[in-house]
Length: 368
Image (cartoon, rainbow, N blue to C red; front, side, top):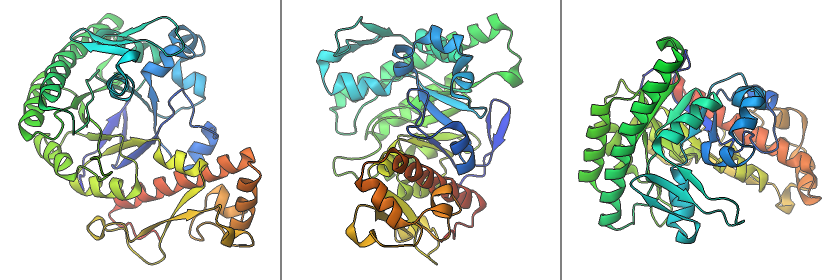
């Protein structure tokens, strides 16, 4: 595990740090106070979605992302590059990717949206984000070699443009160095060691505060791309933070922490919570990444065996859900589709992720 101290907006964090996805400026079903009490210290929001709803001028009018969301901790903003994969590459009718950036054609037929490297940085600065990501061309590891090469070429060029625009804006606004947000470059290259190396070396030459592992982090079977993740960590100097974009399964977070990754973001823990999949540690089993996932289990709340279970989800957990309510009550709330269930379940899974990363940071993750 890396001992790098991560600086975000003048604050230092001991890695690893998990960022729940607050795509539209909110982690679904919970508020800022819930997040703080869960032990969450940082959020990930999405530039592409926020520029659509509620829009950049509205975000500014509401006090930026922090004021709008009532969140006083650091906020990272995805550049919009992932939408190149999730929307355009999956269905070309929703837009196109070229050397200038990304053009989105919304399914609703609304006006077309163009994101260039410069516009992505401008939006993230206007939003008041503390950690900005460069625009990148996201791919899947199974995409053809020609697509991967084109992605790397674009990602490097866009990284250079993002760096220049960021420096211009910081100079124009006369932002002191210690108050400037962090800017991360994203390493693409699919499953090619040559392309990953080419991308990492070019981005290191440009110079960023940290870096991200780009591209879909799983193979076609759903397995973590451990070899590629390890390669990228070896290419980025250990004194620089490295963010595993889209990595959020507890076992994957533990494995990537062992490789030296410092930050993670994903919608998986909160989505699992809303669908009745709650995480807990196996009693007495230490969190050792080399052991795989035998320290971790999922409680399926809808299972009938929990109908009359008066125990909490996890007797070692001190979150609002476990401190106050039983599995039987959660089973009931889930069965009647009560919105309170989503809040309690989300609080629990986020508290689990905070406990996991805190334990990994301390090097003593026997949290069961």
